[in-house]
Amino acid sequence: MLPATERPLTGDERAALAMRIENARAQSRGSILKTGAASAFVCGVLALVTIALSDAPTLVIVLFWSGLAVIFVAWIGLPWQRLMRDQVRMLEDARDTNRARVIRIQSSRVVEFEEEEDEGACYAFEHDAAHSVFIVGQEFYEDDDFPNSDFSIIEILGKPSAERTDDDYAHMRKVVGFIRRHLAQEPANTVTSRWRYSLMNWGHDPLAD
Image (cartoon, rainbow, N blue to C red; front, side):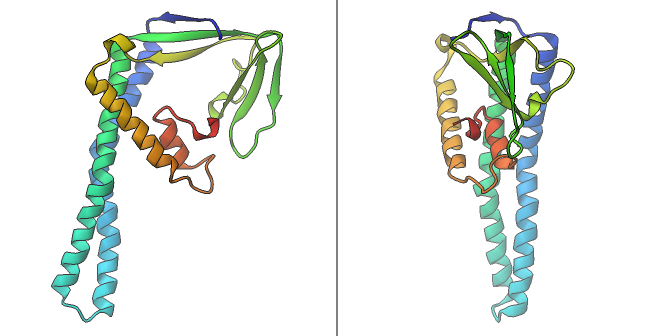
């Protein structure tokens, strides 16, 4: 177990949280509109094709495809809107809790591994004679500050367990359910897919399983 300390959030960390909160709010506001527009376009095109190829009354065809568009919005748009609202709440809890866990890594040796399939940079830092710490991700490409022999991993924390409410646990179960359903929809290209980044947005990287 790596030694860790806790401290309040810095100004930069609070600013980064504020940006994520605003992004989640924007996604929540736009979820119905985007889903509705996409459903209307697809169902509109299919309705025109059906009208051209079918002898059914035009009104019946229009009502059928309009109903399907509404179902798509209710099936996809509304759950996404609720998830984004829940994410806003989770991020706001982290902001209000104002706690970060800092894990300091001091290493005398580091090994860089060759990148595979756009996974991002991969480094192994020797922690002691028996343990190494692996850092993997596209945000860890080499620059002037990284990799180095002395750096910190910062984890922004939410509410302590003792302060969690029934609503908090209900939200956790909802997030776990979302992640499980999302994992069942794994695409062929998992590394750079929106599927992976959607899961990472909820704190789960499927490539780390």
